[in-house]
Length: 461
Image (cartoon, rainbow, N blue to C red):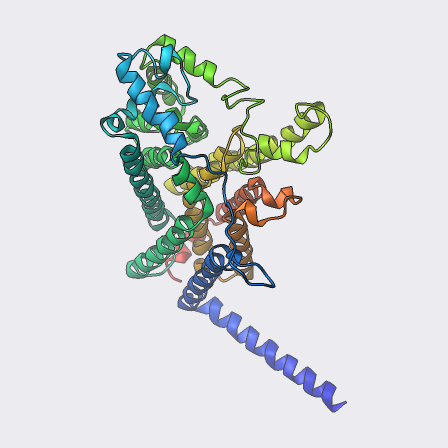
């Protein structure tokens, strides 16, 4: 009896301490800041420890093991050599008539890419690849810096804390995500291949910077975003943001600029590029040869799910692909409509930009895992939005979702080599990018519920 009474008394004391702790967090924004920043630092440290240290040891024996964490394609820089370096050389040798031997078009990249690669032709292949790696690293860092600027200027505003504290939080967020990206397997994968998804994102972010800093400069916005489209095609999903701002005025500049880029090397090269995009062989359409566990596109994910003995391009496969393709698209569409119905603001433009990024990974038929580097921006913007909500008002929901998000990011940056082959849902990164999109959508709709009056009340907190 006495033991039961003591247990109940201890439980009540613990409940009282927990309630006092929650009350302190509700009333003190500085306590909320310390708690959330500490949680993020601890969570991302666990990701680093798990994926880069503990994973390299066999459990039980604790012997070091070397694993092939991504599919190498020697020599290093294969995508760079095939898509940039060689086309630039052939372009010069053919007097700008072809990017391959005998007038062929051995590339999946638009003609503009060959022109942009011309400076590399002044160097040997190995030196050019080394320069390219430096460019990719700097581009990753630049994208993170621009993303932090967006968080600082459009999300962490009017929340009742000083500019100095916002700067400190922004620097810590940059540090955390930079460590996360630069130690991830997909970043190393992107360097090994020399692929340029991060350059496409960089041009997307430049276009967005012009949109928010010089909103009336439509042509420059279109040019920058179109450069991104002609680097990687999939940034076309960001044009609705410009349409959100400019409406029908966008159509003519977009047509003129993109047609000019497509035909920049003449109609023959333009047609050769379109043919190179067809399915089969080296193409990237239906039936492409790149579908594997390191490809997180909905198309490749669906092939992994469809384990029947029939040819994979079957009715069950297409039904599966339709679901995996349409789910992220519908989620994005509903969110885009909700933002469109709201008043256009720079903050809403940031949110639409953020929720559009997962589509770049999930909708194309080829999305090799090195493309995950673009989600450094996704993560920064999402965390910025969560921090805004938590600093504005204490919520156990925000603490819970940050813990879940850290688990998601751990799995997203964890090589498939360390996940059992039978667990395709977890092994392929499709699910984790889709969940990242869902996290974004939940927080966007939470943000839309904040009225103007509540925004003003932030100032007094």
